[in-house]
Each structure stands twice: as C-alpha cells, then as structure tokens.
Length: 293
Image (cartoon, rainbow, N blue to C red):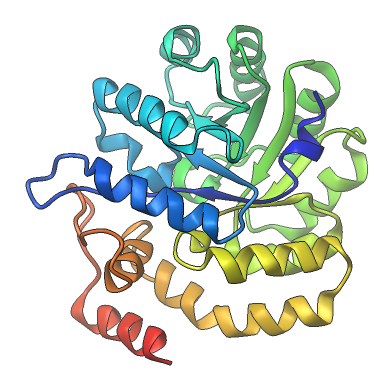
C-alpha cells in the first residue's frame, strides 16, 4: 500500500464538537464531516490534537473513532490519531482500538517528558512494531517541547518498515527541506502548518493535514491541488485570501479559533472543555468580519 498516493492532498484534523453540557455532539460531528467531504478534501484525521484529545476519555475516543468511520462510510480514507508520552500506554491503545477500517495512524511525539533523539527513535520503533496500520510521525515541537530532528526522521524512514510518513509542524523550512532531500521516494511528508503549506508544497511536500480546512475545505483543498499541479500563481491567490483567517485562527489557541469560525458558519456550538476557552470577544469579532467579507 503506497500511503503517499492514497493520502495525497488535503487531510483535515477535525475538531470534536461539544454540546453546551460539554458532552460530545455527534449530530454536529456528522454535519461537520459531511461539510468537509463535500468541500472536496482527500481524507479526514480523527482524534488529532485539534480534536481536543487531552480532554477526551478513552470511552469517548472509542465512540468517536467508531462513529467517524461509520459515518464517512468509505467516502474518504480515515487516519486515527493515537499518541502520548507513555510508550507502553500508546502501544496498548494501538493493540486495542478499533482500527480495522482506518487507513493509517498519526502519532504525535511524546510531550512534556522531552526525550532525547534516541528516546524518540526507540519510542517510534516500538509503536511501528505494534501498529496494525502504517504509522505517520507527527513533529510539533511547539506543543511537545521537543523537536524530532531531520536526522531522526530520516533514520526512522529508512530503518522502520511500518513508518510511512511524517506530519511536519516544526515551522522550520530548512529542516523540512532536509527531510524532503534525504527521505525514501515512497515516504510521505505533509505540512502541519496551514500558513506555511504553500511554500512547503513548493519544496516538494505531498500535501497537508490542515486545521483551517475544517472551515474552508473547498478553498484550502483546491489550493493544495493547484500546488500539486505546480500551479503556484493560482494557488497563491487562494492562499492570499486565507492568510487573514490563519492569523485569527491561531492567535490565541487551537481549536478555539477554528471552532469560532465553525460556530459562525452554523456547523457546531462554540464550546470547548477547560483548560481551553473560547476566543476573546475581540478576536471573535474579527472572525465575524472576515466571514462577512
């Protein structure tokens, strides 16, 4: 299975909608999934960090995986986020979660305990061995406190059979170019930074796992397809129109920003679980003004 071809283009790290009583809103989740798929994206990622996974119980995670896969019903591939900072616990999840119909696993590098590069290497080696599906690394040092270096990524790409790609959200274009230069031909490299996706596509990335495409699936996925076709002038026009949205979306917190957009679009309630709070009134007004344009 060539994951690089199957997951080419735009994936969306979907939010988890909550009701005002803070329970998971499955009706809104169905509405969101349909909106995103109808917008033309290539695949969906459930239980990424944008889905507020740190505040979901295991029971809720299992229900969300089941519901998402059943509701998508093979319309697009589904990638499931399973990560954590306890290697043994992540392995148990990989062995017990309902992953038969998933296409791949996205696994964020361990947060808070800041392992060395050798620790990251061994963590991912064991996860890949346990995973029933191809594993996509997720490097997001702004959230984890530790960068997975280009050298570590290349070692994993070359040495571990079940590691199929990386979502790179270091924001370091030089690191991204090093990975793209030295990785195997079939290794998938996708952007994890919406605002940098266009230049990263120009460097040779395979696509993006996007937050902004929750609310702008049509525009964002078209921009990425244009990049894949080397139509960068046309892609830039779309990206220019979205830059203001990226700025508003990520100024305070993800997913508070994208949830404000989705709320104003009538798709979900503007509800988060603590410690994440909704956007400030100042920024929420900017969301309304942007959508008004």
